View 1: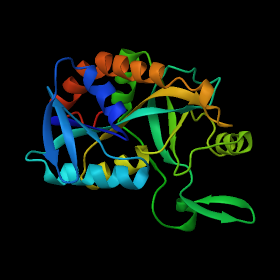
View 2: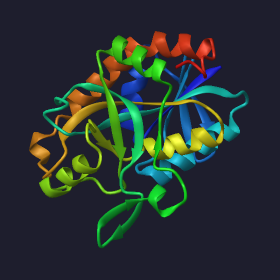
View 3: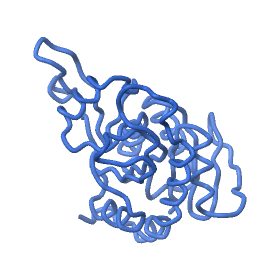
View 4: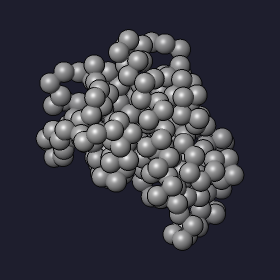
Length: 235
């Protein structure tokens, strides 16, 4: 079975495909195109959890053969100093950090409202193996619909999700679509900026994209091997 990798934008998609070398084959899917190289299909699905979920669902539903693994990939903001700029991160938990409701007592996650879910846990063995291969930290990655722009909001997120390493905008959407298709999911990010007050001059997008390429290059054999043996139930 093949591996589906979903990024937000084409620059992230291209950073992933560079890890596999050579020119990728372009394959049309509903509403987008997939760059195929070896066992990997890489799709730029759009920014935010809704676009990511829709693109992933279309790709999974239209594939001529089932995928064995879905990976949400790209760059993201880090809760420094926990995660340095330019470093890779693998999600131990994919968390919908702002899905829920405000209340007089503070934010209530969707699970506290009695419906839905607010996190997915990728296969722990796969998280460990990819983190070791890529030299990546492993920890919770938060999915938000609005990128954090203040120290106060960054502090509130960390208080609600202790140990969170990275904030991004697509992982939970990708995971939701993958779960409905009964396909395991992983999230792999590279850090481009610190979560908090927006300072574009301090962002290191080029370094993060290079780190994303390097992380996929190192982890591709693990992903292929794990997928080939269909280790869906490994702990």
